[in-house]
Amino acid sequence: MPKKNLEVSLISIPDNLLDVIYTACRTCYSPDGAIEIYTNITDDKEKKLSLIKKVISSGHYSTIEHIQLTFAINNISRAATHQLVRHRHASFSQKSQRYVKEKGDFDFIVPPAIEANSELYKKFTEQMEKTAQLYAELVSKGIKSEDARSILPNATASSLVVSLNLRELIHLANLRLCTRAQLEIRMAVKKMCALVEEIEPWLSEHLVPKCERLGYCDEDNSCGRMKTKNG
Ligand SMILES: Cc1cc2nc3c(=O)[nH]c(=O)nc-3n(C[C@H](O)[C@H](O)[C@H](O)COP(=O)(O)OP(=O)(O)OC[C@H]3O[C@@H](n4cnc5c(N)ncnc54)[C@H](O)[C@@H]3O)c2cc1C
Image 1 (cartoon, rainbow, N blue to C red):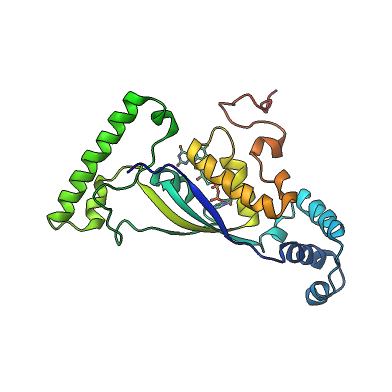
Image 2: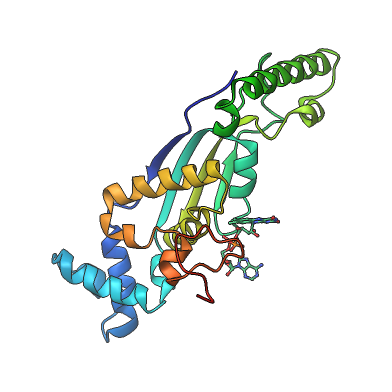
């Protein structure tokens, strides 16, 4: 069955996110010990943010690696999750195609460009139905799901839990919010960032495509949003 709504939920973010980053920042520059810095931390949010912004903008990124974020994602294609799992500093737990047998008519994601064309959409969904029938036949004839899955397409819907630190989320955003990234992963990362920004709005200036961080586009094939490296 075609699955329409990519769902992203932020299932874990530290309550004391600012305090942890602030402690990490101050520990680098203060004669006090890290424990004393954390124990006697200021209530002044602006003061904390001011130091944190200064430290991040000077590229001292280890301070934000202490913040671990976890997302749960539903209705995302294996094509998109394959791109997501290329990010090596993130941790993943994904629905297994070995342990979980697909149902008769398995769930799949239709790219919006195909959905918008009624003729192609019909052909696409018919192809999925045929694939589902062959998958069911393979399984019914004793083929293990770990082998039967070879027939399943990149469009197969998946579900996963992703954990990553704040530095890696910023890196992910820089790469995958770029218009050169594929639409589905761009939408997934956009939702991840929006959920974090709801809680920590000050992060919105970092959760941007790389051109906004660099001040120019370094892609060969620029979308034109920003000037390229060579003007
Ligand atoms: C628009 C777009 C198109 C792409 N097209 C292709 C493609 O055609 N084919 C393809 O195979 N991939 C492609 N990719 C994937 C890309 O090559 C990266 O594998 C993916 O984006 C992960 O990025 P990363 O390695 O920077 O990040 P992460 O794995 O998240 O790592 C973060 C950073 O840590 C450092 N790092 C991590 N591991 C190492 C290491 N082993 N050695 C040194 N430094 C390390 C690097 O500085 C890296 O930038 C594409 C990505 C994008 C965004």
